[in-house]
Length: 113
Image 1 (spheres, one colour):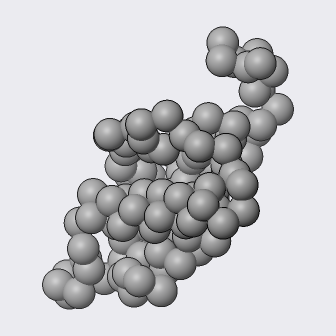
Image 2 (cartoon, rainbow, N blue to C red; image 1 turned 180 degrees about the vertical axis):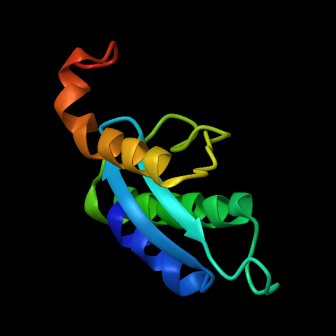
């Protein structure tokens, strides 16, 4: 479900490209590249993230009602999100590698169950 709505972002917001993305048990990572910055056709990043969270939350609620999914307590997503502007190729490489290798480090995470 998360993957589905992540990929829908590029159709909803035509001025972006989606890059690395990973879904972890309690969070996710992804790189959104904003293109055509000189043309006012896009939305600010916070609007895109808000749309993504709304769509995934609504689908999860439908899954709870129709498919017996586990209910979530209060909110599915935390209020804010962490963003980082990637300014060069080296930084992009390092962040992409971090996203790709994140699942291998999950067992060392303090929230690992």
